[in-house]
Image 1 (spheres, protein in one colour):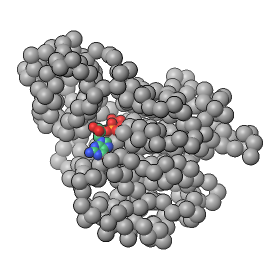
Image 2 (spheres, rainbow, N blue to C red):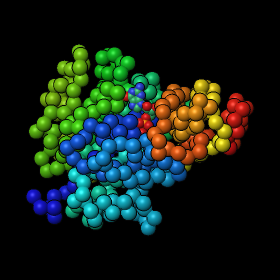
Image 3 (cartoon, rainbow, N blue to C red):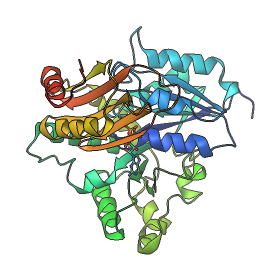
Length: 366
Ligand SMILES: Nc1nc2c(ncn2[C@@H]2O[C@H](COP(=O)(O)OP(=O)(O)OP(=O)(O)O)[C@@H](O)[C@H]2O)c(=O)[nH]1
């Protein structure tokens, strides 16, 4: 096939804040040696944390960091569109495009852009994945009936992400039982009956062969050519039973394509979601900082915190919080900004969070 007729496949990786998109992509990049990947990462907020975390990956990957809001289409200042144009001009240099959308974005904006005449002869949607924070799903964190407004808005965003997904990836499942996994699968199927496959990602890992090149939007669906998905243990039966999976699948994608043009209101961003960046010039007592971030997430509607800090121990650390679960990892060497933390929440007051940090910590954050 000549380059003029061959369309470069594009995989969209969507999923709610903190579900594990970047971790999963990082693992995928490390294990994919048979093709060159171009990666577009979009983060909510004006500062990129995911970019430095992914930049340390192997050769054979080029990273385009489009942070600062949601991926949108239209308008002169559309950084995503500019990036896609740049990729289009030299698409012979890579085999596959991966797009990580922000945790508050719905993938339809990207899907619609790919279908536009200026891109549709060069790029073809391969599949849309949605990465699911399975323990949070099971804990009812995405309940439309939740008492808190933040949870209800999260449920709306997550529901819209699932609605347009071909593949739901159950992530963070390492300590879950088979019964939990079955319940999560049933929940996803109930919320999004059009999801074609449910895949299990142990430790945020997916097999490259089951992730890239699925061709779910091609003329003949790969769903009927190659089996996808799998799970060990007693769960193996329902998820290995591909006829059952096909039973849930669409025979074609007309319904998806149709609904794309009729559901554009999902692109509208709920203005209740806000992010802000706090910085500090002081070296941090990391355990104390972790406790404080945990408390902030319990007291305020903060659903995500991420950033880099310099520890009093001399080490540089990446801080990652999803709700009140906080993790600290060694920071990549290229993450050399000052101490900075990005807070993402729903109607969250920067002033109050700053005051809470100032009350709890001797180091100054502002
Ligand atoms: N236990 C466990 N933790 C995970 C797994 N995948 C990701 N995490 C953790 O979840 C947190 C968020 O992971 P990210 O990969 O940054 O999530 P994300 O979806 O890219 O986050 P946003 O871009 O902010 O929406 C990090 O602390 C990860 O280490 C997993 O499979 N198991």
